[in-house]
Length: 580
Image 1 (cartoon, rainbow, N blue to C red):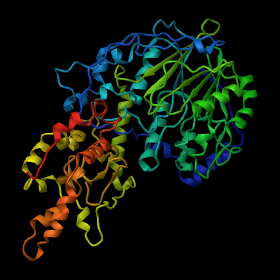
Image 2 (cartoon, rainbow, N blue to C red; image 1 turned 30 degrees about the horizontal axis):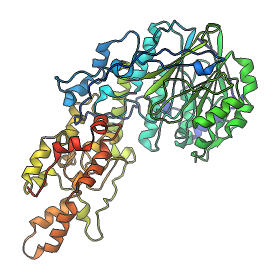
Image 3 (cartoon, one colour; image 1 turned 180 degrees about the vertical axis):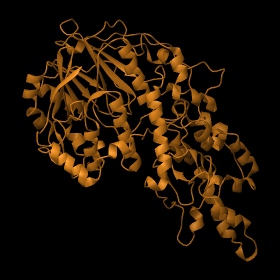
Image 4 (cartoon, rainbow, N blue to C red; image 1 turned 90 degrees about the vertical axis):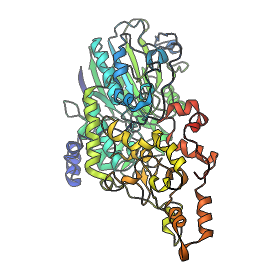
């Protein structure tokens, strides 16, 4: 495989180098090579569902002149299935008690179907991903074996395709992160290191990526380069520090087996409205493509468009520019369809990529044969074992978070909503042990649930350990905002500083209890019956409120079984009534 050329501005290298030197970022990529993925925890509160009946395998082929025939619905699992890999993935999580031995093992092939059924070896295969959104590991922490995604599984997929001797060209449509902040910057650098290891040939730029500091993005274009020193980022309509002086090539051409593959990307007009970075210039997608397609067509035999846009926007683009053989769309749907999307009168095969890095699209190219293309939607499920190279990155990422600490990550405690003027204790946490004296029965019920051991699962049942990861701590300790990864004042800070707030305990649902404890213990002149009764009422919890609070952590990402079985199924395991 060779890269024949990239179209970029010839005078852009010197400004890039000078800008890096001014920003002090020449070694940023090297400093952050050890960063890694969003944590997946070791929560043991849910159990995997039994495998449903295996769906029928469906082959996926395409005639370039009849796109409606493309991908008649391929099944989803490698032909050479390895059940030991399914057991290997998340093996450490099984130790957390999420799947009792008597439970039928989860079979990802039975649930998601086989892959590449009756595929002959292609001349080459395109493997396209997008909208990873910071999920470097399978999204969530419980029931890992029936979740999808992760760079470690993606790496194993690429290795399996290589074992078939298929030449593979890996591409990404962008959307590597979804938030801003120091931790997200580290995850971005981690992803770049992973994409470099996985030999991605071209990467688009997503709207959320462009919210990162411009100097980080500029350093990234230097970090992710090919052997010829060309950036593997590509965009026809996004420019760092202006379109004319941008270090991002307009397109790339990769040659495989004598076939020249031209690749470009655009940020759709709807997505472009989300870009608020003043250092980024974004041109209208159609106008930018109009300036690129003629040269791209001359330089290539097969053309690929990577686009982060709505599906309707992508359809309009391929109608206007029908030179593309494949358009990979990062539109953000929960689950991409099994088939490619047909556009009447256009040969382009449109495939959508889903979100959170849970799926990959694989398109086999067969040249003059019929069909010319075959398409397979690949769920990155537990049939794919964790590649050791990516596992090492995951461990390094957690070590990086530990070294930085909450302060180094820019995380500052916030005031709890119950903190009132002149009564700061109303928003102060006391810890579960303070509740046990007056509520022994309720405390006993809680202590027998997985909630009581939530922090321990991060320390002892997660591989690697994740007790320094804010995205895990938010639901595994007491005194944090679950969906925002921020601690409250007096909430958990570390096992050394706040051991009494380990576990997901009483106050996460009932609210901070320090003021309540003080009011109950008050005697004599300090006794205030009115305040005591007010605080008792404040900490009472209705079933409806409990459901809302549970769902802040037990969401689709982190507790798929909770979503499937519902609140009522799990409520009976933790319900407690009355004072005692």
